[in-house]
Image 1 (tube, rainbow, N blue to C red):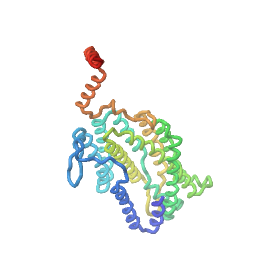
Image 2 (image 1 turned 180 degrees about the vertical axis):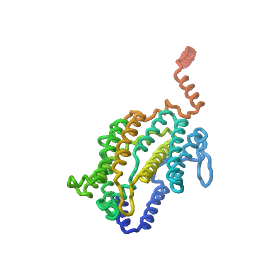
Image 3 (image 1 turned 90 degrees about the horizontal axis):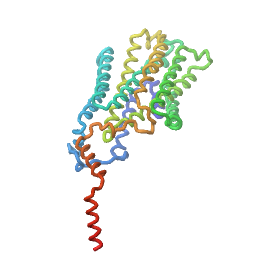
Image 4 (image 1 turned 45 degrees about the vertical axis):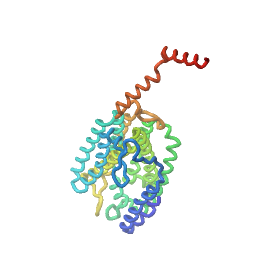
Length: 381
């Protein structure tokens, strides 16, 4: 809410350097609570098993790394996917960016299949398919809503103060309400059922943009600003946040014990990479179409069809069936039984556990009864 309140007016005034300075200052705000230790955590010590001191008081869990070396290396390298794609799309052509994104996409899926248990692979693939099934057109929609009269004579002609600040503040309030309503009415659903319902609702939300682009709201007697607030700022924001919430539940329940942060970052990193893919594909579709988004005599005639195919049909055809790959568990239940998976479990520890179990469960023999009788006789004597 605070950010949206000043970004719009500063953008209308052309004060982009001020926005950059404020954004930089806000990026530094987490350092103080982190250094002060506001987040409670168990501090590791050099005396702990497997811990090794590197330098400047930094410790490295060498024991856990050697035990699960392959997953740690794969997770670390996967973090380069997003910076790599950003560099390629910045300094290379759009075609090369799309080709690289597809190659990295297949590599991430293949590595997940090789390194992680099959149930994790199915969940990760489901996340990837759900994410890429919704192509992003936020850039071209921004051009459409804020185009001036020379570019688009019959357009909405929103100012940045209205498009970013007013709609953004309303959207932020809607996000808070969406979280409360989700917790009250949808958190009891199974993950698969919740995702199916929300993806279907998400496929309805882009219809609001189509109605505005086709100017059908004028036929209904609703002004552009009112319909935009009701559609994009309220309905679309509500759907987007409630779709994101079960995904965050999956991210949190996907991680195995003692590797929570690593596997969580791996899953979120892949989801972020897929989000970037949808932005690149959206840019490519707009570029290779006959649409003109800047200058004079702009052309957005193909935009409703593109939105209908990429944001309505594609999620229903690809994203909806992908939910079947996710275990149909309640959101309050564990998603994966890591005890049965025994993923990268030390064989020695397993044998020791089995031996101790056999000793504990072994029935008391005759010799033990004899020893107990002799001890009782001595006590009587």
